[in-house]
Image 1 (cartoon, helix red, strand yellow):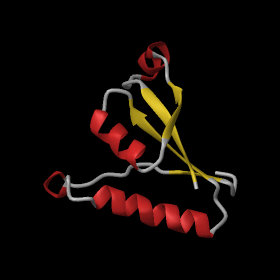
Image 2 (cartoon, one colour; image 1 turned 30 degrees about the horizontal axis):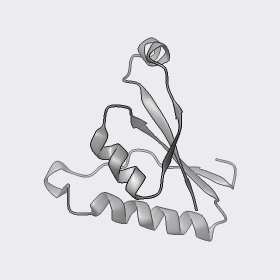
Image 3 (cartoon, helix red, strand yellow; image 1 turned 45 degrees about the horizontal axis):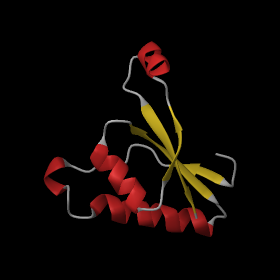
Length: 88
């Protein structure tokens, strides 16, 4: 985003490859590259009710920073999301 911050988006794994550590490996590689280039914080959005994704990001060191309101999510026509942050 601004040299100090990066945003991880669309971290997707094919259904038949899930639960094998693929997403964690992708994120670790992204974190390593980001750190090498001077990034201090990585952000991502996770749908509030996606417990599996939230657990993955929490295990990777992300913490919830901001929760989108039901009102805003409804206006935008999507499920409410949580903004998560990882300090590198």
